[in-house]
Image (cartoon, rainbow, N blue to C red; front, side, top):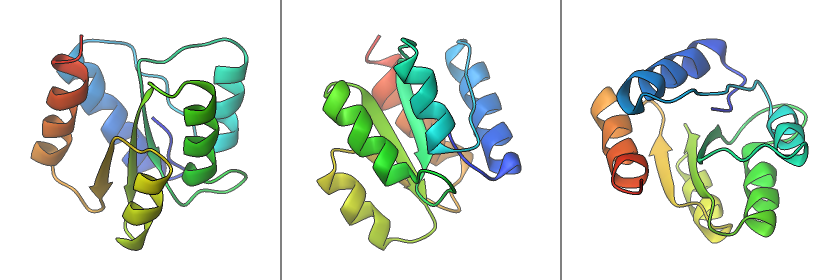
Length: 116
């Protein structure tokens, strides 16, 4: 879970932890998440905000898809125009902020629960 907004980051991480019963790593920037992956870690799924400091979510998405094209990447943003950019870069899904629990559960069910 990657988001510079601590409230959103903690909320999504907690929902994911309890809904899929897996450990969820959280990061406050795309840069820190990318360094985690470069160190050899292989998350099952990446959920990231688009607008963040250091490295935004679209840059993170682009790097992840180049390195691991099959990695599931879900992007989030309050700006609907970011959905088009995210999809062009290979995002598997997009959550428009603000989103509800059911929206998040639907994404989790589609990509995590059914995928594994």
